[in-house]
Image (cartoon, rainbow, N blue to C red; front, top):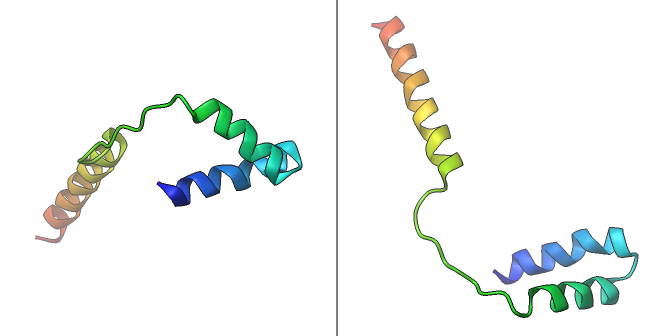
Length: 64
């Protein structure tokens, strides 16, 4: 999670022009936030994997 926070600050530096200002703004916005850990695949990843299986099955059917 820490690397994501650093990435957020780097992305916001471009918008605010100063790393200290960007970090302070994010700190104030995210301070009351609750971090929720989610196990498992996201709906996007599940959809992509299902799509890949369908394509693979179609390719295997043509080869057979």
